[in-house]
Amino acid sequence: MLPDIGPRVAGLNERYRHHAAISVMEKALADPDTGRVAMVSSFGAESVVLLHMVSLIAPATPVLFVDTMMLFPETLAYQQEVASKLGLSEIRTIRATKAALAIDDPDGTLHQFNTDACCNLRKTVPLEAALSGFDAWITGRKRYQGSTRADIDFFEVETPTRMKINPLAHWGREDLEEYMVQNRLPRHPLVAKGYPSIGCAPCTSPVKPGEDPRAGRWRGSQKTECGIHFIGGKMVRVKPAEAEETADSSDKDKVA
Image 1 (cartoon, rainbow, N blue to C red):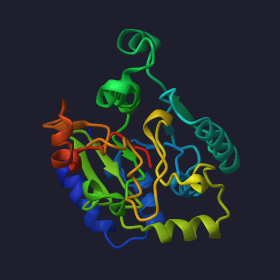
Image 2: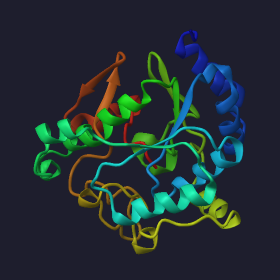
Image 3: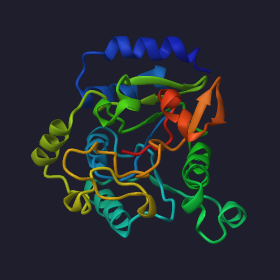
Image 4: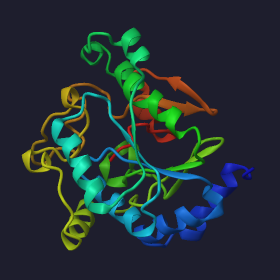
């Protein structure tokens, strides 16, 4: 059984505070203090950077891909392309159960009147079930992505038994661009069409020059993350107006 998570996270941040992103990734996959680690990837606009890093270090690392069944067709095609090109051998596609969908969203319109509930049904609950066998998960969250992510560290306490690992926490958009160019990595086709952050098709719109990169996610609402937060180790629903205040405690949107 692993020791208390707080001291482990503090120790990891202290040991690897000045390491480069790929070094943080390598250490995270090998350090006993992280335990069993999975990567969670949306196969979105910037996901290929972390996926490439893990393919170089440990290509058999479990990669959890949440298919909400409302993703852009381009995302599904891109997922297949990247997985094949990088030789990732343990991609696990996660979906809501048919029973849950039949009860909570039988006609596929839940997103039109309750985006929090839709994210909970199609993203958070399936992902939580998939993560139940892991002690840590790698995310693509970065400080530059907005106020709710401005202070994230490489290692974060998520629950009393699980941590998040953010190897790209200190990277900017220019770092991502340089890495993708140098390594000749395939781009998500929607990036060229003005989508710097890509989620589900009904709730993602293009971003205008000068806007926040995540401005196209749930446009016109106060929602900036999926809306499920861990408080005292338990999932707690929060109202959209409260989301920004508590967003640092957890972010189940996972996916870059």
